[in-house]
Length: 278
Image 1 (cartoon, rainbow, N blue to C red):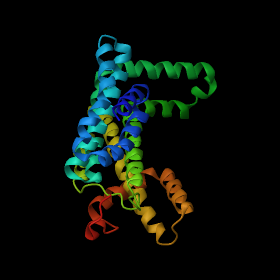
Image 2 (image 1 turned 120 degrees about the vertical axis):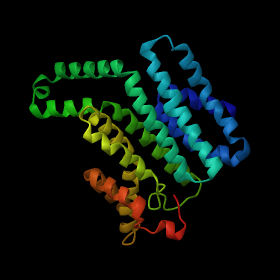
Image 3 (image 1 turned 90 degrees about the horizontal axis):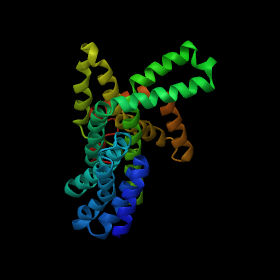
């Protein structure tokens, strides 16, 4: 129903994370009702975010929220659905939407840099007033410096988390089985990661490289979890195995992401051989 699509746009204005998540889940109903008109109906997602952007254009304080809603939620979900309708491959759909979020995240950090840093500094000042001793500790200062450097990626990673969760839930509701165990990115995805690595040799651009690399490694991390889950499921397939794999991933994020990166090309689970794509 049109009212539901409009409501999803309204939710996105309050929380781009929740808006993107719900928009992706609703893709299933749009495709079931009328695949040929799914994209036209999904355009209603953008109505309220577009109005919010128009009214906040002259207000720098709220401009970033309207931009996040319109691009980071509405357009990302629309691109996901468009790719799904045109190509019928969920793996390609989530990759296209992720690329849009990563690119927008980089542009966002440049357009709203002053506002983002001011918000961060205000939060640090408030924390210093509440816990002055802890905030003066060398370990805390080091963590704060790292957090400030990775500030652009913090929003991008959060939104990519919503994208991935919505993707998995949508597939589950559509009747797909072994969703995580068969999560498989397109073979060209790794080229995006390799493309940002040369920035390391240009010191002024190392911060850009770190933020882009962190964002791009979210999906390989999910694939790495799928590889481990696929291995463990041969021994036992139950909720305990899933919880154990997630715990291992949280404790070894870099190693799991590297495993997913390698699996994109090496296909440890032989999914491409079997003709299976998540």
